[in-house]
Length: 237
Ligand SMILES: Nc1ncnc2c1ncn2[C@@H]1O[C@H](COP(=O)(O)OP(=O)(O)OP(=O)(O)O)[C@@H](O)[C@H]1O
Image (cartoon, rainbow, N blue to C red; front, side, top):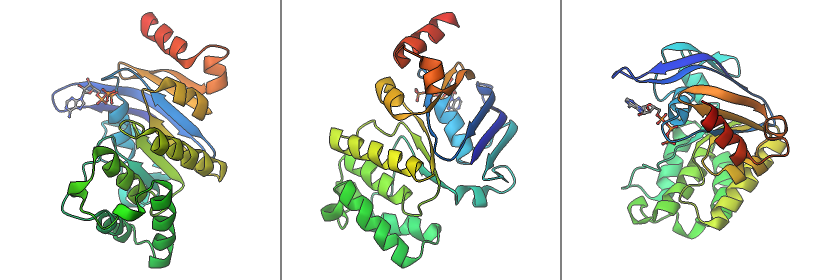
């Protein structure tokens, strides 16, 4: 579903943010992406979803190249950014329809999706309010509902649990698990290692722009906690 082959990204100021990254996310995977502040997680995620270009390597979504076929690739992704920086002058519902229009979601299909996720994330009564009036967590909930409106198989999330209350976090974890059980795939970054260990079947650890662990959670963590593994990796490199 998602293949990252030997991808490197250097910013214009010369910072080598990620170097020679390889990842393979398949149907049914919940893939956690962990690393210290500044390790390169957001850079990798922004490259995968086509927000910025990368210098070397290839990113494939369902066999399409993000380099040469970005629109086709983006249609196959639901992206939930770490900062719900969304149009403040729109209502929540207008914003969701705006994204649904971009993704050309038929009206009947978007109605089902909006009803389902607005109920799950307790936003039904707030949909007609302006985004400017929302709290940070409410903006995040709307960003999630809007990202899911076109129901693609691949979800990419950058720090999805930051700012969500316990109920919304619980519901998001449930949505993620169900999506993977139904054959979808999820790749997400997080600093919440307990959540990653419970939720994910696979994990990649990035340190100073390079992958230092990558594979099945059971094989990488074994009987240890992911936190112990993470500290070992940090201390070794
Ligand atoms: N626009 C940019 N221009 C130059 N350097 C950047 C830019 N964005 C990020 N970097 C650098 O790239 C490296 C990786 O940053 P990135 O934001 O990908 O890390 P991260 O793992 O997402 O960190 P965090 O957990 O703090 O969000 C850092 O050294 C950062 O300073």
